Length: 501
Ligand SMILES: Cc1cc2nc3c(=O)[nH]c(=O)nc-3n(C[C@H](O)[C@H](O)[C@H](O)COP(=O)(O)OP(=O)(O)OC[C@H]3O[C@@H](n4cnc5c(N)ncnc54)[C@H](O)[C@@H]3O)c2cc1C
Image (cartoon, rainbow, N blue to C red; front, top):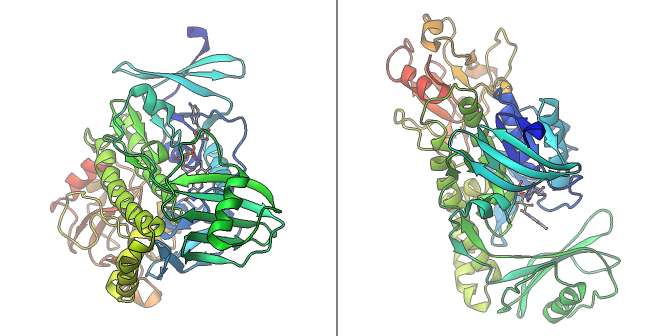
């Protein structure tokens, strides 16, 4: 059907939060993008409502948080339902409550404003990777549409059609246990954060609009193989058996169940097809980590794929997406599995819970778990010199007055082009950058309210007299001492991460 063919550089399948963030990042990196989305309208389900510290920093570094409706911030988090103080140095510690439809609206408007072509009502049914390009066949309102691009990214969620079409290896296990959940109007039950009762686990949270979200798990109850949501009756009966309360007179507004399945793609890249978000990993949605992990996948991938699709990338750049994000995913999924075991386990897990509760009281364990949950401890293996900042994200760093008028590194990163930090008045900068459009700035003096001397997350602030090279996703790939930036690895790091001069 050549007449119906649409050509682009990158095809994104799925306009969930991950696909939308990716689409915006691709546009920021200069790539053309078509997003194919099965749904005709955005979701209205609240779904994941927690954004963690690193995700908020990411959104800040694209200037996006101002448009969120003042999200409530809470430093109280949990590990498997055990209270955990999420206080950490950084610009956005804690968790931020944002219903998923607000996150999607924000990202959708941003991506569209940057020129992403989002086509709703288009379900992808076939994907072909010819080796030279990739084609997706979608069924749209007015019949089939063929889209051709240099790459395709599957952001089509936990039941990813693209994963199935490619027969991608997705090792792990199915759900063994599950939590039943309902948003219910017209009931009066006490709020419970994670109440462990003799027969199970009960959670209840009443929202400002009077609707109560209840979640329940009966000790020992196996996950049910489902083709749709549970009935409200299943939930009220389980609730009665666990708490003794009758909520059957309530009005169920949204009913669902989620299990402790854990799977991760063996490879996030299959030739010209890549996977991100729930399409790449399945995990129990405890504490919003699934969404945050997925958004961070997109943020890692977008600028790399834009550079590849527009012919600017070093040959190894795109493969670093799998290396970096598969490693992070493995670790986060293991932490989620540990939480699922402790949360859904019966009385036999109580001694382990008691021990962890005791350990969390110690600052080292608390900060370790808080940094993992917040995503602030991520350190990619980027090569480069041994330095506390290399591989970690650059903490929010105030800048000295610059020609561009940036007041901080967060603001300087908004153009999506990375950042070179160094002392003002350095000679030879143009020669070192070799025509690459990497913005340059100088950190502010410590006495002007800088982050100097403070630790942020698990890393320290950049050395004001030295040099720091930051990728578009905010991760530091090279840091060097004062003196000329020539030699000492900076040109090689620029080649590796920003393409040839
Ligand atoms: C019912 C439900 C409740 C959840 N509750 C929570 C929660 O309480 N806490 C939590 O942390 N997480 C929760 N999650 C998980 C969280 O919503 C996901 O982690 C997050 O949405 C992942 O984003 P994504 O963009 O990867 O995938 P999705 O948000 O699933 O987006 C995938 C998109 O791809 C589209 N799509 C699928 N197939 C095709 C196709 N063939 N062609 C075109 N488009 C396609 C879909 O319509 C969808 O819009 C929940 C998920 C669901 C489904």
